Image 1 (tube, rainbow, N blue to C red):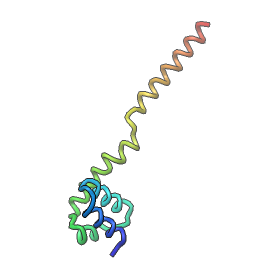
Image 2: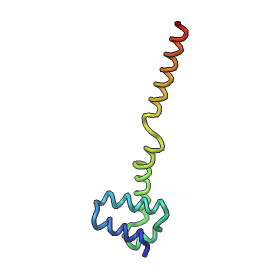
Image 3: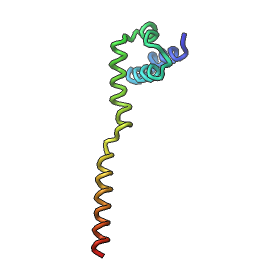
Image 4: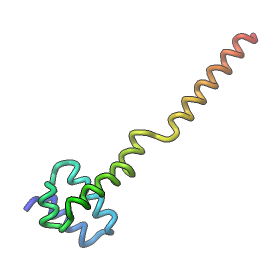
Length: 91
């Protein structure tokens, strides 16, 4: 049996369900465990695994790829440059 599956079984028994789901998806995304192994050993159907994978991407990875405050800082930088240009023209 795969060592990662043993670790996941330990999470299933000891940890919260939420943490167990993220660990399953992380192992699946890192290609440490095959979907068929997850279905056999842990009883997670492929449909559930795809849903968990979408949620993992949306909630965990997407905020890291697209920070929300990125536009605001760019706008502030542009305003700061305009203010400096006005001060140079005034003096």
